[in-house]
Image (tube, rainbow, N blue to C red; front, side, top):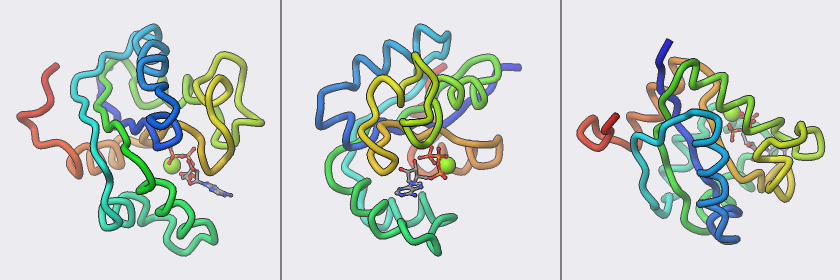
Length: 139
Ligand code: ATP
Ligand code: MG
């Protein structure tokens, strides 16, 4: 089933000039980048985006990290896009990520792990809507 997921190339990726390298992994996996823009997340953006984690001990650090440098926000489309992207991203902690995954290849640490991907259809829908009006998504 063709579906859409939301992706972020995080500050550690933009800072190290890795956006093209990561996009190559995404496209090689058969996912299409149907929307993309480079933005600087505001504190309010990051707090809303990661609101589900607001009681976690790492929340402050997470918001600081996500607002520390530009990010690239994307909508990816493809067959089973949500699960497929989670698979090619690899585990949250890069030390546990499988060979060939984006986080194994590029992530620096659990806090600077290069990419975000939605974890379910409802979160994908809400996350896409936070950053992209329908007119900016061109499949
Ligand atoms: P993401 O939501 O960014 O795609 P994920 O779904 O793999 O990542 P989550 O559990 O949703 O992982 O955590 C969100 C983000 O919070 C992680 O990507 C990571 O950057 C950060 N994070 C998670 N656990 C920790 C931790 N123990 N210490 C520091 N940062 C953490
Ligand atoms: Mg998550």
